[in-house]
Image 1 (cartoon, rainbow, N blue to C red):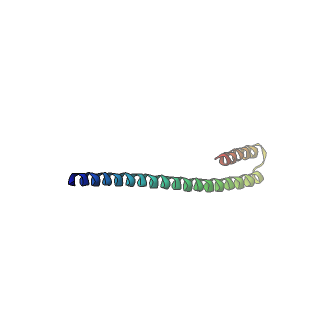
Image 2: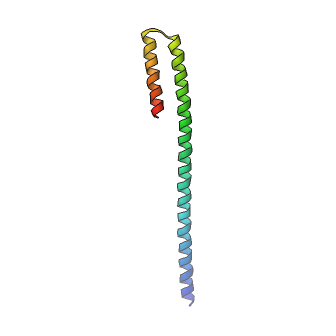
Image 3: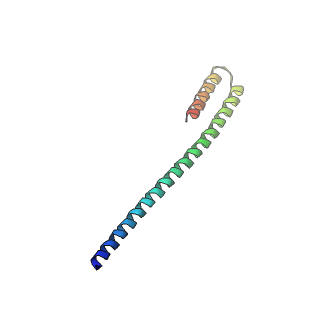
Length: 87
């Protein structure tokens, strides 16, 4: 009788350990998802800020620099701006 109770107690403890491990895994997965979402949002904000800065610099340089060099600079900034949009 005591052996049976000990066996049941050991089985109970094993199940508790399994449940704890599952709960920890789920919590870690949720934490990872949350961190990924925050990182993605931060990247979007930074990309938007960078895009605005490049756009502003392009506009300012278009007015300040004339000729072929101005066109090349404008083209380079436009290319970077498109790259930021695709990011």
